[in-house]
Image (cartoon, rainbow, N blue to C red; front, side):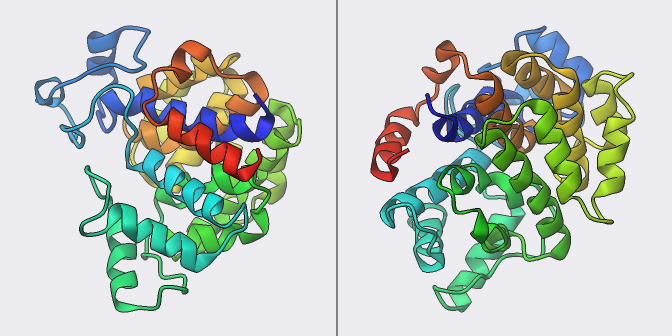
Length: 301
């Protein structure tokens, strides 16, 4: 599998692997439910009761994608429809066709997606009309953008769902990490790229992650924040990259860390898919992979 394919595949596999325990904020409960092999697990509402949590995916099964993975897939479709070129109108139309009223998506709609859909309904189809949001949907679409070599459009893609400068700042860091992974970089190169792309708003949280490798990622994530904010998710991903040795170890650790594990999984899985490879036994569990392979062919990846 090429590096470009691995970025997208790694992101989608990590997202699907994390789905069953998405938004369960009690690490002890997660351990009790799944032990050390939490990937692709089936859960019920009862598993989320009595602890901080939100059971957002009652209609989904192991192997399905969360709304983050679906965002990643939507941009992959939009790029394929334009022979690999980024076109804002094509992306907006694909977004509405999938997530909007009467669309093909059935599942949880997060705040950024709702805001974007509302803005698009009242705006023009060729404009960037994202929500005022600083959460992890900002980076969910980046793996296919980087895989297709369209990183010059990173800010437009980020602002499609997250129309804030802070989201763009963290998005630039995520783009730099994925580019380094795509271009044959090691994890060390990816980490260096993150710091080179960081600004005064993002660097302190990344420095905290680099200074905290004496603790495991679960503990660090609990301390820095387990919810959907970019200022929590990016440091957790960076810490995981600095401490994990394999794709499987990192994704399992991310799931066990709890909270918005799917939001973090997209960047983490995209980087590690390219730098470490993805177990085929995990790839085969993801229901969307037949379509993804067809889209890869259309894009020439």
